[in-house]
Length: 387
Image 1 (spheres, helix red, strand yellow):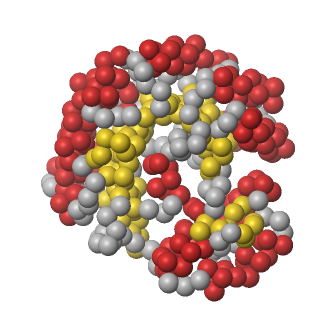
Image 2 (cartoon, helix red, strand yellow; image 1 turned 90 degrees about the vertical axis):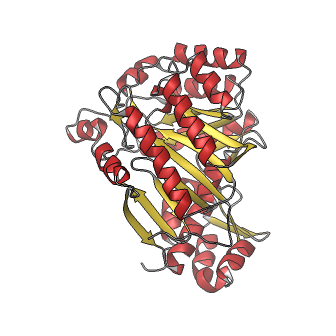
């Protein structure tokens, strides 16, 4: 079903905790309301999945570990300790490597933070989304801007500085002025890393239902583009370099785990609804909790679907993912990986995109231009081999 590339033991792990104390109106990630869920059984099943997977698809030391959700910090300190102790036992890990846990402002207690630090967590990623309290309420978030400041003060007191925050722009009713205020307040926190995403309306979310009913007004595309442009300028001015379409960091503070995805490297996906990439195979686990637990109770892996990528698929992904990075796609790396010069596969496409001002081809790298950044998905489509 899944094969590993024996020659390349560089691998990371994504671990999914699907529980939330409330459900945000825009979120389509695999998640369930915490109350009444078999949380302890889930943690044990998750550790069993890691053990089963490692015995079938062994690897050396983890490059990065990322625990996301859902809301990992919705677990109690005791549950977090059980999870993290199991993870550290089963996944060999160098303490210098990046180990991230997602957290919500207001969810993080001193006890939980101490547990995380004890087991080697050295980076937090926090879902702030906006500093506008009215907007936070409108999008179904339970925290306030004040909670963000309190959490940051608490982290500072605990000497925990490797923190990233997520912001969402083009929210319903969000004005350019309002977004500028959020951006300013975010940069004033002086954090090493920021992720900014435009709101994407997903099926099966409350927001999508409201849009269909005409109950939700979103900023138009021009305003959204302006927000993105101003983000790049403000971040650059604040010393945070854009190293990927949606991500900005101080030099040396780029998210190593996210770079695993964009460099098209291998990673395990553990937990309900998690996806992984091993060898030439992408796979996904069952999403619903009971569907995930059932095979594990019987000593089986909870994989619901897997796809072995063709060489064409792999080449396409190398371009889609690599072009999201500011430094772009290395032509030499492409040739080393696939045994063929990139021009032999994409020569005409590259020439056309360069002529259209969407791509640059220099110093051995293909990179999106500033104009290309704004229409990234259109550019990526050009690299589909079977249109």
